[in-house]
Image (cartoon, rainbow, N blue to C red; front, side, top):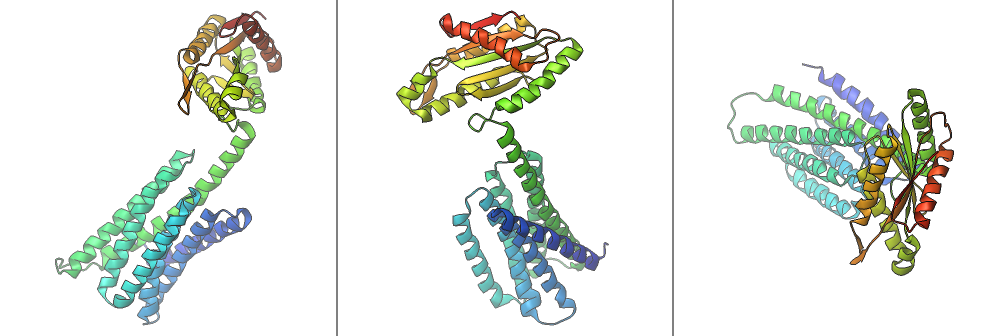
Amino acid sequence: MMHLPTIISISILLNVIIGSFLLSLYFLRQQSSYLYWGSSCLIFVCAQIAASLRVFIDFPLITHYLADLFIISAPLAAILGIHAYSQSDKKCRNTCAYVLVAAAVILLLAFDSPFSQLITTAIIAACFSYAAFALRKLHVKRIMHLVLLKLCFVIHALIMVTQFSLLLSDYLGLLQTDLKQVLAVILISHIVITTLTAMIWPLMMFLEHEQVLSDLANRDSLTGLLNRRAFISVSNNYLEQANNNLTKLCALMIDIDFFKRVNDQHGHETGDEALKWVAKKIKSQLREHDLVARIGGEEFAVILPNTSQAQGEILSERIRLAIHNDSFVHNHHEINLSISIGIITHKSGTNNVNELLAEADKGLYKAKLNGRNQVVTMAF
């Protein structure tokens, strides 16, 4: 079996480092989820230290009662961290406080008996089960890290349920075997998974924060599409590939017809929702490798790599019909929207995306002059 004191020492060191790092992030960013998770790590350290003192002193009030309260407090703090990240921690704070106070009172009456371990294990199992459930409120883009975190909580809950079942069976006299070895393995698993969970959270939050910063720099905040700057940057790469591989590429300029009327008649809130609706409609008709952006106002741009003129015209018409044949509904108002599209096919040797979009924009202008709600193809 692995050497328990070594595992405890490593866990204490890692949790002190992680906890201190998270608290420093809290003081830097004032985001309360870091405060709760950092506190959870340091509380778990206190629990391990208090429990380890059993080897040196016979003082159950510290080595059992206080250690159990720390062990219960650690997952409660983690739960508060989850709710703080999803901005729903106000009611949760009261609930966690009630749980901790109730546990403190009950354990004070039985801290020097085997019954205290049963109570502590049951509460911890419930905490980790709820933590796995509470993760559903987190809206993160890196789903894999969220799945790993949820898996840690589920495994932890199952381990605690197993320990509770064994302790209860032993308490009732249903088991005739010595549980010391089994409980030691469970303790090691508890320590390892708790430390692993503490490591996953800051990693997930850091990557999520970086994703948010990237989105702020590259994406339109309203529609979630690329903004003009990011679109031009990526489009240049597409254009370079088309030139190197001698492949076709189409550029589309799209504008919502009479969009000012929507804002004037229904308000800017409705106008914003209409923009989001049109953005989703456009994106739903595109292929995975196509590029779409909101480049200003009610205007969108699309790059279709490896696409001939005929294919581009078919896809453009499909986008137009998707919007024309459906109705945008907001606040019980049904609004019929349409779009005009200008399309240009890339000519080999063209290295300027802005020049390509300018030609597509001429097609868009003609589509509007010709009565709107149509696709006009330009020849380069």
